[in-house]
Each structure stands twice: as C-alpha cells, then as structure tokens.
Image 1 (cartoon, rainbow, N blue to C red):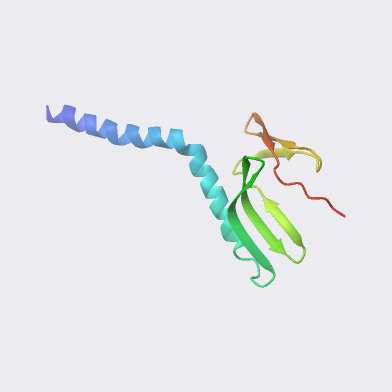
Image 2: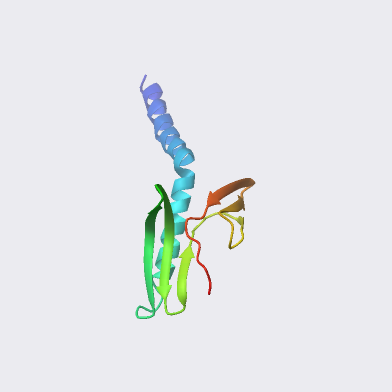
Length: 117
C-alpha cells in the first residue's frame, strides 16, 4: 500500500511541473528575453540614454505595448523583443509587419509611425 501512495506522489511531483512548463513555456521564454534585453539596455551610458521598458500606448481606442523605448540625442529607438529564431519583415509605411519564427507566420500591427523629415 505504501508503494502505491509513494508512486502516486512521485507521479504528481513529476507531472504537475512538466504540465505547467508546457503551458507557460512561451511566456517564460518571452519574459526571459525581455529581462535580458532590459538588463543589457540598462548598461547604456546614463546621461546619453533614457530607457523605458514595457510601455503601453493607446490610440483610437486601441492599445499597443512597446517592450523597450530608448531615448537619446541620436533619436528614439523602439525595440520589440522576441526570444525566438526567425525574421521580421515590414516596410516603414506598412500598418502591419510579418513575423516568421519557429515555423509560424504571424502578422502584428504597428501603432507608431514616424515621419522622417
């Protein structure tokens, strides 16, 4: 009887973490990527660069989240962090860009468009 109870608890201790890892793997991987980039950006020289992480903007009733915004004398740099292997395609004038990563193709909307004068 003791062996059945011990085997049951061993099974539970192995299955629950494995299930949680499977469910939250993408979120965990994304959070690690964003924290890594934020840490690297925090090492930029302080007087020349201001870094804002996890910025949420709203426009016309729609919201968009920016992972990292770097403000400097050289311009504004908007950084979207993806912790995957792949490519992102888009034109400066396009409303949507395309992400091709890990055998998936996704379209995402750009909230900010800057005009270069």
